[in-house]
Length: 98
Image (cartoon, rainbow, N blue to C red):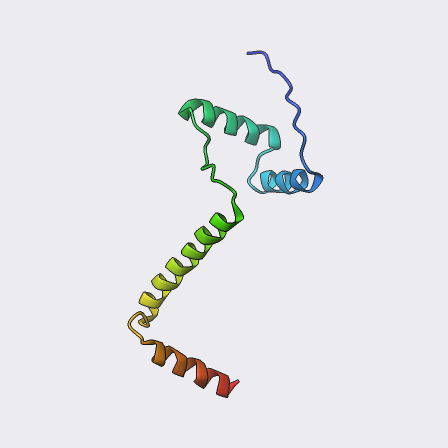
């Protein structure tokens, strides 16, 4: 199959970072772009989610991820059933020790 060239404009820093990423995973930019295009054509969709970049929405999504992570960690630590008074007591103790 005959090859064609495609020209893409990128911010210089983005290009540098992407070159470095590709090098770290053992491929070049051409291979990465070909993988992206083939995956898109194979599945008939972009190989990643496209999300509205509304900063308020993104902040809410990030906050929800942080809350979920904290909840999971509290179960692991055995602190998921602590009252607010107990939590504040521990914080006070730590401040006194610092």
